[in-house]
Amino acid sequence: MGQGLYDGNEVTAQAALAAGCRFFAGYPITPATGIFSRMLALLPPAGGTVLQAEDEIAAAGYCLGAAMAGLKAMTATSGPGISLISENISFAIGAEIPLVIVNVQRLGPSTGSPTRGADGDIQFMRWGSSGGLPLVVLAPADVRDCFTLTVAAFNLAETYRCPVFLAANKEIAETRENVDLGRLPRPELVERPRPAADRPFLPFATAPGRDVPGFLPIGGPTLVRQTSSTHGVNGYITADPDEIARMNGRLARKLQAAVDRFSFAEAAVAPAADTLIVTYGVTARAAKAALAQLKAGGRPASLLILKTLWPVPSALIRRHAHSVGRVVVAEMNQGQYVREIRRVLPGKRVAFCGQMNGQLITPGQIQAAVHD
Image (cartoon, one colour):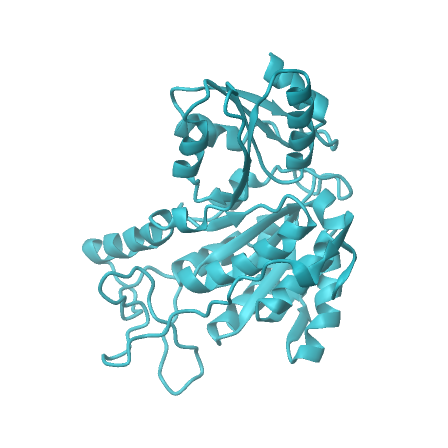
């Protein structure tokens, strides 16, 4: 694919193919079905597999099986589907199975409004699995991001052996933009780590100084034990408190200690500004327009567009907020990520600009929040 008009769903599918994805399973759901349709056209000619599952639970389960067999796998759904696959997300976290999940968010709760967008699943993606252990959530702001962040999502899933969400929404997924895909930056592809060859294989053992175990596929010449239950390095169920603490500590540490390596963001800094606008997703477009209008009106502000949402890139946020006295968080919900900004910046005045009514936040609304 070269230059042309593409929507976010098309580009997400194309990026998955470029990242090495060779297995996709899904269930049709607005507004994510475009990814399913495009993967159906792309994967079989490349030697890959596409399955329509009986529901989202089965789709995620198929992907887990394919990933355990060594394939790069992806599913795509929306809020109602994410609600269904919580158990399989927990499985991927606990069993350290690489998996990319595209959540094309729509207005909720429940089945909500299939043709209206929102960012109402932001906290749910982080906390909607049992155990409370971290995973990665990346948020594209436009069609170009859908390409680069999808490739990054596969790289992170492989590097850290974990599920990675791409938190799109209806407007990004179904809006066509003029993009030259051939000119977009393409990160070097990453494969999941291999176990050390000089020691007996243990499915959840890590090398000294590392927090991610080496991977071998099920079905190969070496016996591989996978389980979603609490286990030790050998994969057997354990009730030993020390062993359980070590495992859960490592699962949390492997992502939280590494977040600075994948704190994707875009920033526009005005040296004299006293206000920092923080946003993500499609609202970034309104924030950019508001920034230009504020500058023209003699009230410059700085802007930080977060593209890594979880784990929270605390160091990045503190660095950009260091010189301002006030922060305005703009998001299409009733106040979800603003909670994290207030937690990370306890000494700052943090205001919220948001709504959850099926309408986009306008530049004027962000301007008004800055002037308040």
